[in-house]
Structure formats: C-alpha cells, structure tokens
Image (cartoon, rainbow, N blue to C red; front, side):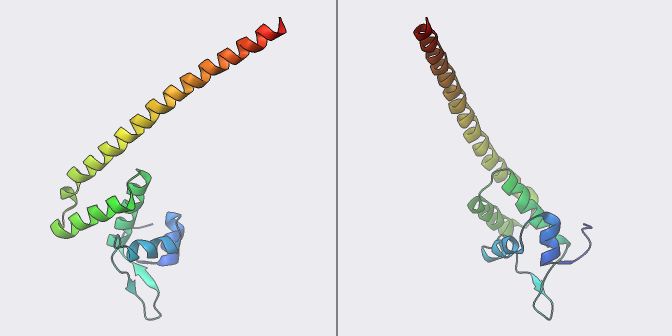
Length: 130
C-alpha cells in the first residue's frame, strides 16, 4: 500500500489483515482520530492515519496494552513529537521484557519439576516390573 493514497475502511482493514470494526474501535477509544468521511458516510484514511494505525498494530504486536497506547496517545497530543514518546515507550517495553523474563523463569522451573516427576514415575514403573 502506498502511503500517499487514501483508502476506505474496508480496503485498509483488508490490507492490514484486521477488521473494519477494529479500526472503528480504535477511533472510539481515541487511539485513532475521527476519520474523514465521504458524502455517503464512508470512512477514508490518508497517509498519516495509515501510519498511525500501523504503529498501533506494531505496539499491539509488542504486547503494549490499549491502556498503555492511550497513555502514549495523550503524550503525543501534548507534545506533537514522536521522539518525545520514545522514553515512555522504552519504559513500557522494559516492563514487558521483565514480565516475559519472569514467565520464562517460572516455566523453566516448572519444566524441571515435571522432568523430575517423570523420572520418578518411570523409576517406579521399572521397579514394579522387576
């Protein structure tokens, strides 16, 4: 999709592999600005809105919550500079990395426990067969 073109909501949703309802929801909660509408009421999105939607989808992919996205949107509304978002975004990503590391640690411990339990069961089975 060329960033210079304007597209209707259905086409944009199809190209980004999301639903039109998702785009409308992002508008409803303030993550996206209200769309320009054609005479018939169809929503149309220009290059800036397309870029913003792609950014939202990337944040979602990175595990950023809608509430965190709203926080970033509020910061952006105040400062009008994407670079001013980066420090807060880095903090959010660091928090997500820490949670992932904690989950990995718990899963690793669980895996070890399951493996030990399996060894005991196999030993018991072998002892019974002798």
